[in-house]
Every structure is written in C-alpha cells, then in structure tokens.
Length: 454
Image (tube, rainbow, N blue to C red; front, side):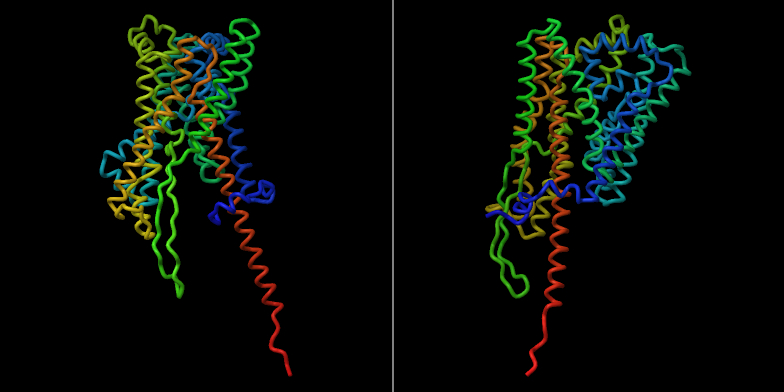
C-alpha cells in the first residue's frame, strides 16, 4: 500500500517551482555565491610570473597538475586566490572528527546539543587556519623553487600566505552560508562547481587529441563510454537500499484503537555519500601538489621518493587511496550518517521494533551487523569507481583527466541537490494544501444555517 508521503512525492509538480518564493530565493542565493567563487578563481596571487606559470601548467596538465587544477576548479592552474580550495577545511574536519571519536571530552562536547556543535565547529575553523598556513607556505616555497616568482623572498612568501589563507577562509564562509541559507551542502557544492567548470575544457582537449592523432578514435570512444558507464553505475549504486522491516504494535489513540503497522528502515549501500572520496583525495593531493611545483624534485631525495612511491598510478598510491576510502566509509557512516545507537533509541521511543529482535541494545547490535555487511559492498563500490580511471590512465597513458572521484562527486552532489529541491517543493505543496483545506473549512462554516423556524 502506498503511503501518503510517497503518494505526495509522486504527485509533486516541478511547475510549482516558480511559485515557491522561498525556494526560488534559496536557489538564487546559492547561484550568486557560486558565481562569486568562480570569479575568485580568476583573481591571481600577486608576484607570480603568469607566462612561466602557463608554460609550466601546460607541461604538467597531463599528470598530477591536471588532477589538482581540476579539483580546485582551475584556481591552482591560474594560481588564483582560491588555489588551496576548500581542502584545508575538509582536512581539518577529518582531524576533528577523528579526535571526537577518540577523545572523551570532545565526544561529551558533541552530545551537548547546539552549543557543543558550535564549539566543535570553532575548533574546526582553528584547524583550517593552521592547515592553510602550512599548505600556503609549502606552496609559496614550491613556487620559488620552480622559478615562478618575479622577486623571490620573504615578502613574496608572506603575500602568498596571506592571500591563500584568506581565500580559503572566505570559501569556508561561502560554504557555511550556502548550507544555512541556500540549497544543499555548501562545501560539496563548491567542489562540485569547481570540477564541473573544468569538464568542458577537458572534453575539448580530449577531442583535440583525437583530431591531432595523438589519441585514436577508438580510444576517444572508449573513454566516453567508460565515463557514461561509470555515471550509470554510480546512479544505480547511490539509489540502492537495504530495507529493514520495522513493526509498530497496536496502540490506543484517544477512543480509537489503531491497528498494528509495519514500515521499512532504509539503509543505503553507500550511507556516507561522496565524503570518503573527498577526504581521501584531500589527504593525497597535498604532497603531490608540492612535488608538482618543485621542479628540482628529481634531485631532491624526499620529493623523488614521494613521486616514486606515492605518485598517481603507483601501487602504493592506489593501495593507500583504497584503504583510506574504506576507512572513511566505515568511520563516517558509524559516527555521522548512521549512528546505530541513536536509531535504536528512536525506534524504542516510538514503540517500533525489528521482528525477532529485542528493542534497545540488541536492536543496535543487529543494525550495526547489517550496516557493516552493507558497507562491504558500499566501500568496495567507492574504491572501484575512484581507482578504475587511475589504473587505466597509468596503464594506457590517457593524457586527459577523467577521475572516478570527480565523476562520483558530480553525480552524488547533483542527486543530493535535486533531492533537496524536491523536498522543498513537497513542503511548499503541503503548506498550500493545508491553507486550502482551512479556507474550505471556513467557507463551509459560513454556509451553515441555524434551525428553520416554524
């Protein structure tokens, strides 16, 4: 039997988008802030030799330089003020969440409600500033080592550090504003727009290589089919669910006795979404970014070792990438997206139970068992999507970057944003139905007449 919520979702009309004023304002606000972000990627950092940077990025575009530039929306390739992107904030979030799971004081702070979450957010911001300072200094030193600065020295380094750290903090603020007053997760949308903006240039470069003969027509066709296949596979897996039957006993509401009901608790195959891929990529991009801009990496033993073992396509790089994806898939699911203890407590408070499982701790253990088994498939799917293009590019030397992480982010964030817009439309239509029913009720009340006089 179709529930009222499902029937309402099926009858949701996208034509009501123009009438939903609040939703329209949220969408326009989100678009305006994303345009500001895109404009900021074209504002250059002071003191950079633009011609030398352009020549260098053309040489490095087929390797890790193209990966990092695409992941930052092209800001790194142009050395814009948003060259660090939002990665320091993501890295700080990883550290804070790990500490929250291990440090009892932070775990207690997380349970204190809104005030505790604000305190943890403040710690995350402090960590973002510290990581951004470290990364900005490393990038400034790498630019000097690569002879990309007009006047190397401490003045150049300080100006680069201030500009890049300020850009990262501004991006963090933009993401928080989009989350609070716009549509979707602001941090994910910033990464999404940055990757999407570089896709047309990557496609044009792919077909240019095909026309020039550097890449065969069959190779171009296989790359296009691979990307389409990955997108279809990601959509299928993101919509896959494991439904757990929930039973609600008979209960008395007023003078009526309701019948026993059953429902389903949906457990997604990938409850953590695109977060594990973003976390793993952010941790791997920092050392490779510094190695990319250090032109003396061949003579530097540390840089040469870093590129030899942890460069894109290398066995240790792929192994470390896969392990981090699996780790963050389990960690983020159990600590953020699907907390089995909280779900079990909520079911117990609502008098719901899993058939054959005792409410409370037994239900939490059963849910944890189911989630762990589902995550075996979910984490393997994430690792496969992220690593397959890496392996193909390393084995067949494809000179254009079509990473599985980018495809995963584009599809997942796009689906999540559309779902949130759909939810706002449902809420708007629901409010409209309530208002109409109230007006009809008042109209009927006015039409009622008193008893006829004899």
